[in-house]
Image 1 (cartoon, one colour):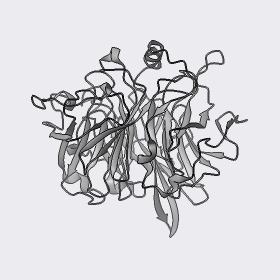
Image 2 (image 1 turned 180 degrees about the horizontal axis):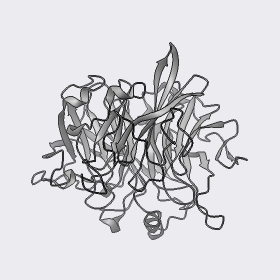
Image 3 (image 1 turned 60 degrees about the horizontal axis):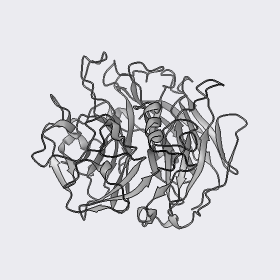
Length: 462
């Protein structure tokens, strides 16, 4: 997630004269939420202006309140060690404990070899003892109190985002291609791992090798067909691909993805680079899917392999991925022509309809974006229970969680106040992992640095 320097992004905005005061979203968002009954209720004004937090942690609209669930460096309630750093992608899953309803939060830690606080190694849950990343799991009761907090997987690397499964687990993704012998690792990395937050030893630390070894970002599973869609966050050319995995045991439950399957990459006929498409509503039929020759990338990264004379379709910074209605949506955080993209853009959301084999550009971010306020570069993204989207900002200056209504209106939902710079040159950590409780009553979100997990409650509409 935090893979490109803010100065590089800032150069893009400076070149294009981005001097507006708000994010502009082009496109009609109503198709994203046509199957969400609650999506009719949110007006264009959002929830009002943000109120400065006297504690200096998180600004929210009036009527909303937050609770800090966990902070890096504090002791894990399990006693396994300190809460790891670099809080990233996250999901909230329903569960039961002693007969009562609970929520399981599964949280990634995007830790590299230089991580401040690694995920503690735990016997039976550790893939590579040299890996500093992994996931922790928090269990909350219906009042939002933390019942437990423990390591769910360890010994992985650069766990960025992922996605929930229909059977109540989390697929955590490694955003790296480092092999054994690189950066001290004893095993190859770049895999997806399944994590059961209620019973972590049930899933262990087993890489889902058939799903590919590359710079994974996020996944989304078609709940009807069981197809898994995967994004690749390659920010330097050659850029990443959009993949689908056809499991041998679709929708087979916990552990079923270990049974293997076919990994394929998306080809949009006549479009080698998605950044070349700039108009919302642009639609492409006859999308093709091409088998990845070597999913394990033993010699050549998957995005560089031979896909035949027609080539394959690339895109810079493919990040968020989620399922909505009958389609999968994925995010390109930005594109910079000077880095090799076909064109500049400030963020896109694409929709793929598998029944029609149709790809559509549904949202374009920018260019009327102020590099200080309110932001740039959409990253983690999720559907909001009252309709529209919640988008985590990953850029420079003030950092926000933005809401986007079905009509394309933007409003600030939260602003980070934890200064990780100096009084003279303040900096704020990006947001990550925005997600909602199964009942829609609580928004959970992480501050990446310093690693902090918030629960936000208030008068949510819908």
